[in-house]
Length: 103
Image (tube, rainbow, N blue to C red; front, side, top):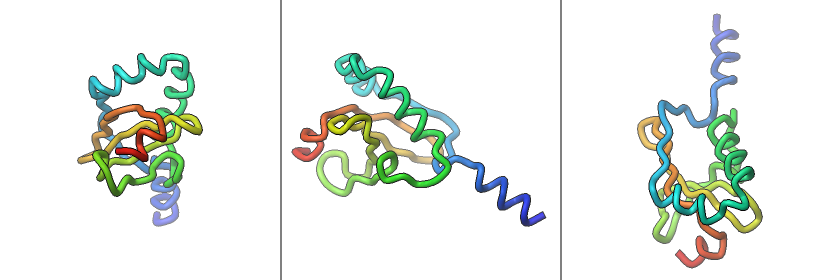
């Protein structure tokens, strides 16, 4: 029925993903910010499983070297940079917010 279809679609994650890839730079940055490992993992899980758009997890970047990517807030000063293309989420980098502003 239409109601079942709507309920099913409402349960689908905002990002409909087939796979997730972590770029070498992202993995390297995660090692650098190892003290935030738990928060990074929690943020990854939230952004992958969120049922609707959330600015703190899915905000688009419109300028600088990461234009076309999205970012998720890990802490007040730490951002996960990623993009989604053809249902593939690709983690690109993990940077400090002030570095993002300078990019």
